[in-house]
Length: 294
Image (cartoon, rainbow, N blue to C red):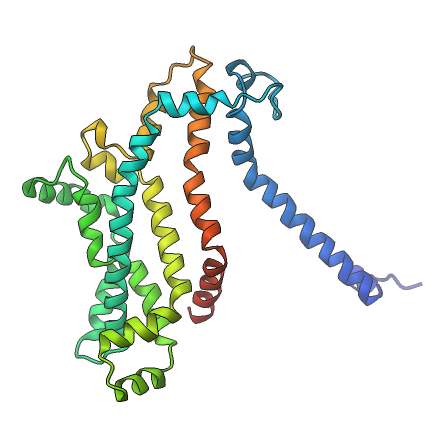
């Protein structure tokens, strides 16, 4: 009796059963990977409710015996999170708004207007993304030091008001997909190029703008290197700097403060999660759109 290969046996399974088996396998893999990636976050939240002794218990305990909400009050009081939150927002709000405006204008010029050297200049703009930040770190510090900006928020805001290459590229790729007939009809109706951008192109680009906004906020929120370089006054420290300093200065013998630190870190993830859920649908649409147009 001839042997039957595994592929042949699989093909012999009825269609519905085969579809069900495939779906179960795919979903099982997705759930497993989700748990693996979510485990650090689950452990973070769990530890934020524990006592110091529970946090270091061997074997580890995932569910605390007693939920200590006071860890959040102590963590947010002991660590100057409120001031750090305000400093981070002072940087984030003007930087994101200014960057989105500048990137939209530049991307429109690179995609919807015809002028000599456009593609060459766009290539040079995008090429700057391959330059490592470590290469320009010292020259930028010297430059901003001569301007008297070191020790202020200006180096963290002003350079980004002129646009960022990645988001210029992202918006340009979307603008190229906007039908030129819409712009031509608007020009016939007497619209200026700025009005075409404001009234027609940008409303269509809301999903891409949502992506740029979320990515920029996420980057600013977790940025440690740039604030470390330019901010020398603890009163100006951002969220990332404050949490890092507390983590470095934390003494291992003081076990009770460790859950406070975990509580403060958990609390700082809330703004990013809130922003994502507020723009979730638009964000997902933007991912799909940019994926198709890329």
